[in-house]
Length: 86
Image 1 (tube, one colour):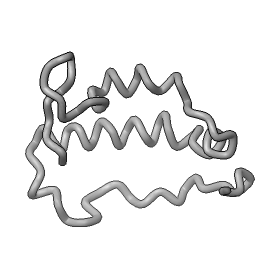
Image 2 (cartoon, rainbow, N blue to C red; image 1 turned 30 degrees about the horizontal axis):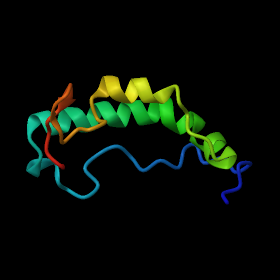
Image 3 (cartoon, rainbow, N blue to C red; image 1 turned 180 degrees about the horizontal axis):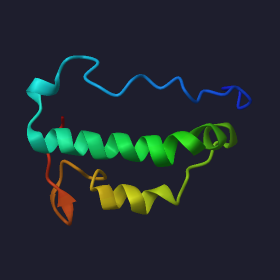
């Protein structure tokens, strides 16, 4: 189990094209990536250590993930985005 007392803030890899794949992504895929990156930085990273240590799921994030349309992302219909696997 991870040590919850260890401060991991500031150890996030720099935002950017680490694997040099941006040119393979469509504009819409890049927009989704950017929205998810912002969400993770703002909403997930500040609380993930606490929830990991407590073995809990931050239920408050589920509606926000739904608003991002990343749950069921590859499913067409049913209010899902119908996007590709990338």
